[in-house]
Image (cartoon, rainbow, N blue to C red; front, side, top):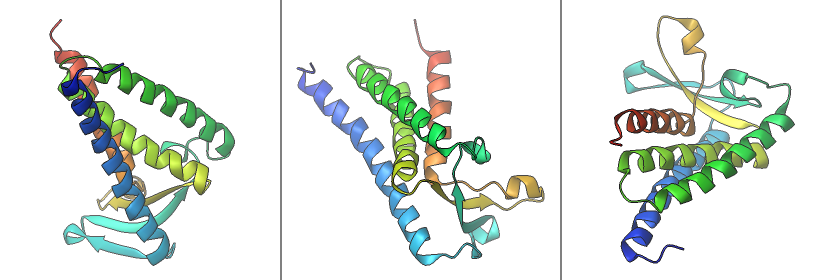
Length: 163
């Protein structure tokens, strides 16, 4: 399918990016699971980031947390679609920003998907300290940030892509 050696190399690079981000987030989740209690709150970055252990059975901000089976299979379907789309996109020339964005999304999504199947919940571990308690109480993981950042890159790539 991918006979050009440059294309094969490029595909490997983007999959390596996604895999590295997946491994990084899973490594941090393992550390948090084994070295934090659910009552621990540690400060980082001069107190601007709060490190803690939190479990999420739903989607972002516990959306659909009372339907973890539905969330698990919905995200599995979206993850499979994303993987197929990324592989098809990687076969095309150019579109570097979009490919990078989707690699970030794929790495973050696979990390959270692994949690859903292995642990039955997603491990979140940091929040931003600010004066608004509602925002401070939202707990993320790096996978979430990879998904968010990748999505922004994809949107910008779509907006500014030369037709």
